[in-house]
Image (cartoon, rainbow, N blue to C red; front, side, top):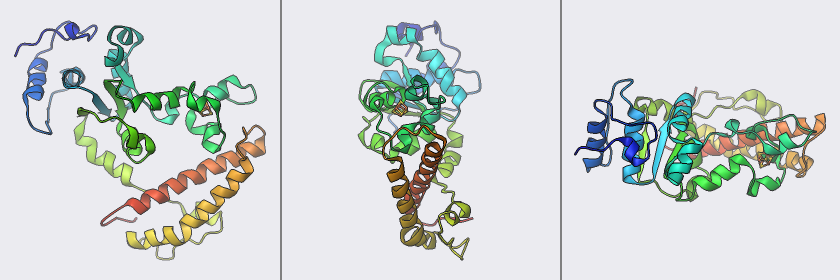
Length: 282
Ligand code: SF4
């Protein structure tokens, strides 16, 4: 199979194939296997191979390990010009919350600008932009639809959202490109690691288990019986204090920060309860 240049298919700026790219695309497209591994040297243009094979196959998810590569894919295939020319076929990048600015905090002079992970809506504020107008939530609403054909994100985002409502609603992909696949186990291991600090529990009057370092089942029981109910209680109390208001003064901001912190701890506890099999506690 001799493929016309990538530019013919709308890959702007890629007027010819580098040595080996065409063949790699061909191997992937001809293969009937569920999983294909392409081992290509640095500088051979793996990203184009993946993006191209994906586009020829259907809706594609491109997973990267590094923010730098995500940015590069955005620059190569997801610019405004790409969108104009290729519409939904242009790469659509979705980042974690820290990658987006909170619009409300930029518009309201009583705030210092923050990113979405620190935004008032993370502490219970019912922001009107959440249903349209907030770049982050708009991106989530768009990415779950079948419209974007090449979605680019990082492992952390993808693993996290597999457990959320976004993951449950997301339109399936026809191909998943796992970039730097040698790092997949590390990424999975990072994702499955639950870190808890005794200090966060002591601060709310909860006794840390005396058998520190025991097996995972003991920890799960502690989460169910002690840690979980205590953190849920403190989250409820803090939510009542915030009462859906925008935290403006120093005290209100401190309460909102505390609420975000314990909500994250609650998430970790929930994740711990989903762990199956043998865990390793250190
Ligand atoms: S929904 Fe509103 S408060 Fe939340 S990040 Fe978006 S703009 Fe900020």
